[in-house]
Image (cartoon, rainbow over all chains, first blue to last red; front, side, top):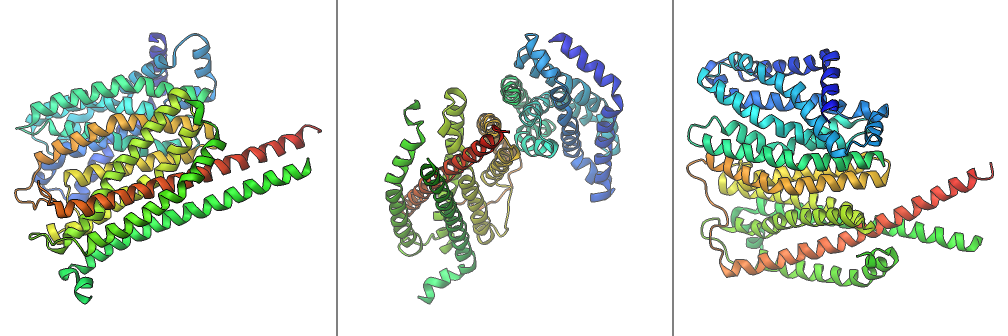
Length: 214
Length: 54
Length: 244
C-alpha cells in the first residue's frame, strides 16, 4: 500500500501540470467573486472564508475523475488486486494521494486567496486550520464518488453531483470555525465529520471498485 | 361555496399548493401505471409467442 | 431470505394486494382532503394557510421514509444479493423525489403568506433541499450505466453512504441555522398541535403512504417486465450468433 502511495505521488509529480491546473482554477474562482459582488473591502472580508471554502471544494472535484480511471483502463487496478492488494488498501492509498496532491497545495495557497479577498489577518490561521481538517473528508467522499463512477464516459459531472451534497456538513463546520462564539464547537464537529468520512469511505470506495471489476 | 374557494383570502397559495400535489402525484401514478401495463403486456405477448413456437 | 426472491411469487402477491392499497389510497385521499380543506379549524395566527400543512408535513415524512426504504433495500441488496431489493430501491427513488419536491414547493407556498418570502434558509427546508440533491444524484447514478448489475451495486453503495451522511447533514444544518437565526421568525406548526389538526394530518399521511405502496408495486412490476424483455432480446441475439 505504501508502495502504491509513493507510485501515486511520483506519477503526480511527473504530471504536475495537471495538478497546477487545479490551483489556477482555485485562484480564478476566488478572483471571480470581487467581479461578481463588487470590490468593497468590507464586503469581501465578510464573505472571504465562504468563498475560499467553496473554491477549494470545486478545485478538489477537478482531479477526482482521473483518480481511478487511468488505472482501470490500462489494467493496473486488476494487476494490483491479483498481487494481493485489497480493494480497501487501494482506495485508502488513492484517497491519501488525492489529499496530498490536490488539497495540500490548495492549503498552501489559502493565504494568497485570503489576501486577495481582504480577509482579516487574524482569520487566516482558522481558515487554514479548517481546510486542513476538512479537506481529508472531501478527498474521502470524492474517492467514493470516483470509485462508483469508474468506467463511465461522463463520470466527471456525475462525481460533482454526488460529492457536493455530501460535502455540506464539512463546508458548514469548516466555515463555522471562524465564528467567534461557536468556533470551538465547530472544530469538534468538523473533526468528527472528517473521522466519519475517513472511516466509512475506504469500504464504500472498495465496494464501488469491486463492482467495477466484476 | 365562494367563501370556501376564497380560503380567507389565501386562495392563490392554498390552491396552488394543492394543485401541485394533485398534478405531480397523479402524473407519477399514471406514468407508472401505463409503463407497467405496456411492459407487462409486451412481456406476456413474448412468452405466449415463444410457447407457440415450441 | 430468498423465499420472496422468486419474481413470480412477488408478482402474485403484488397483484393480490395492489387493488386494496389503491382503494385505501383513494379512500384516505377523499377523507383527508375533506378534513384538511373543509372540516378543520382555522389557525388563529396563520388563518387558512394552515391548510397547506396537511399536504406539506406528510410529504416531509414520506420524503424521509422513502429514503429509509431505499437504504434498507440497498443494504439487503449488498448483504444478501436479493434480486428484488435493487428493483424496489430503484422503483422508490422517483416517488421520493415527488414527495421531496412537493414538500419544498408547498413549503415555499406556505412561507410566502406566513414569512413574507418564498424561501428562507430554515433548517428543515434546507435539509430537505439537500435530500432532494441526494435523490437526484442517486437517480443519475442509476441511469448512468448500461450494465444493470453494475448500476445496482453502485447505487446501493451510494444509498448507504447517503444514509450515513443524512443524519450528519441534518445535524449540521440545524447547527448552522441556530448560528444564523434571525431574531423574529414566525414558527410554523408550533410546539403543540391541536387534536383537531392531528386527525387530517394523520389521514393525509396514510393517503401518501398508500400512494407510495401502490406506485412502488407498479414500478417494480414494470421494471421486472422490462428485465424479462431485455433477457429475451439477449437470448435472441445469442441464438442468432450460435449457428454463424
